[in-house]
Image 1 (tube, one colour):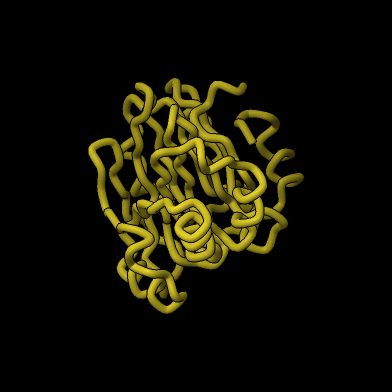
Image 2: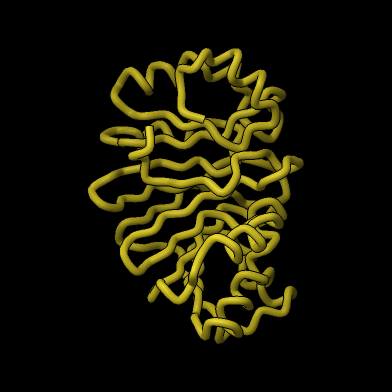
Length: 216
């Protein structure tokens, strides 16, 4: 099914080949969701940034596989294309992160909300604040968990949602163990929401246990 809102640059866990990252192209706007250490080379090759009047990057948290090339992308857009990036994030140390990576403040602006974007605080690891979000674009509502070890913060947001993007893993821990949420995800799908799995540490195992129930 290819009418889903998000296109993925990668769906791997933090130690995989392609960091979990997605994008949306709408007319003259490009939105990138997370910007891990593999993402810079991908977007540099994939996109003609001259096409876009607005470039936005949503950052869910500051692990390297989600923000590791954020500074590089901003610098590239600023110095090569003379374009200022809008960074959407509620991470408490996002400005510090950009400062210590030498990103000129003129090259970006940080916002923590928009009319069509609402961040959802979740639990991932002890030392970082992490967020998912709800987003409405082109009359589609999506919920995106980012990295999370629980579904609970997102359940109140799933009414009238078209697409639900969920962090799942074989082993659990800092991420949701697929075995523990399989039946809940089936119920969400039965309610009319398309469920998409992402950030997978063992795709073969997850494919086997889900038996093709969800988009991957």
